[in-house]
Length: 454
Image 1 (cartoon, rainbow, N blue to C red):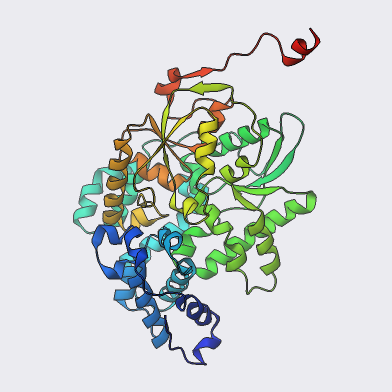
Image 2: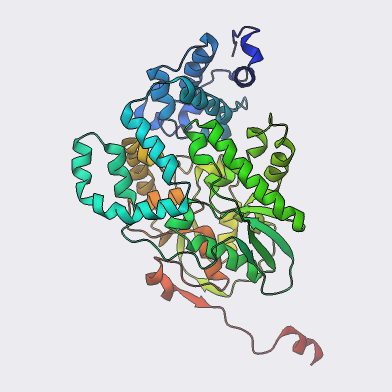
C-alpha cells in the first residue's frame, strides 16, 4: 500500500510505525473472509481492509478521529483472525491499537459512552471493586428490559452477564507461593488476573494444583494485578502502560529471589497482552529491556504444560469435549494444537467445532459495549457447538467461558480444570452431573520393580 506521510509526520513514533505497517498491505481482501464482524454485517468498513483504509486516511490527513472512524474501529473485536490469514504479514493488531489511542486522544464520545468506559476501567481490573459490583448486580437485573428501552443497552448487557451467585473465593489467593508436593522441578510465576479470580477462581486453583502435583512451585507476586488489556483496547495507552510496568516490577522482584522458568497465564486474553509488553514499552528506556524479558518468559498454561511431563492421568472418561479455541490463543498467540493434545492425552474425546476462527463475541468488554453484534456472534458459535453434540465445552479464556455459558445449556469449563480433574483434582464446578462418566484408572497390585526381580 502506498502512503503519503510528510517528513514532519514521520517524526512522530506512532505515525512512523503506522506507515511501516500500512505499507505491507496489498489490498488482497483475504482478511474479509475471516473477519468476525464482516461475516455478520457485510460492510467493507467493518472488515480489516476497510478499517485499514479508514485508519490510513485519518493518520495521513493528521486529523482528529471522526465519528465514522470511531464507529467502525469500536466494532472491531481485535480477534486477530485477519493476521493469521494475511499473506503480507500486516501487523493489524498494533495498527488498530495506534488508532484506538488516537481516537481516545482526539475523538468525541457521547456522555453515556464516556461514563460506561470509565465505569468498566474503574471496576473490572480491580477484583475487590468488581466483586462488590457483582454483588449489587442482582438488584438491577429486573430493570434490564427498561434499560434497553431507554437506550442503556450497555448497562443492560452488563447486568445480564453478571452471575446470579458469586463463587467462593480462591483457595490459593495470593500473593504467595504454592510449594510443590514433591521434588521441585520448576518454578513459575502465575498471573492471578482480575475478572477471572472473581468470576471463576477455580481456574487459578486448578492451575496451581495441577502444577504443584508435578513438581512446580507457583508464585503469585505481591503487587501484580490486571495485565492492562482492558484499558489498552479502549485506547487508554498511558493507563495500560502503567499497569504493565507495575506487573514487570512485581515479577522482576520475584526473579531476583531465584530462577523463574516461565510466567504462566491461564486467561489467553491476558497472555496476548503480556506477551506484547516488549512491544508496548519498546520506547521506554527504563523498562524496554525488562519488558522484553518478561514477554519472552510468558507462556499460556497449555503452552507450558505441552513441554512438561504430566505423567499418565489417574482418571479416564468417555466425555466428548468440544474445544473452543479462544481468538487470543489461536490468533494472538498462535497456540492451536497444544490444548487439544493435552485434553486427548488426559482421556477426553476432543471434537472440532466448525468456524473455529470466528469469534464468540466476548472480546474483553465487547459483549458489553457492542451487545447486538456480540449476541449474533455468540448464537452463531453456539449453533456450531451444538452440531457436534458434545457433553461439555473447553475454552482457555474466562471471557469466552462467560460469553458461551450465557447462551447455552451445555456446561463450559477451562481446559486446565479438565486437566486437573483427569490428573487427580476435584470435579470442576458445573460438571457434577458428568462425574459418573469419569472413572479412576485401576492401579496395579504390583509395581514394575517386583516383576523385574521375580
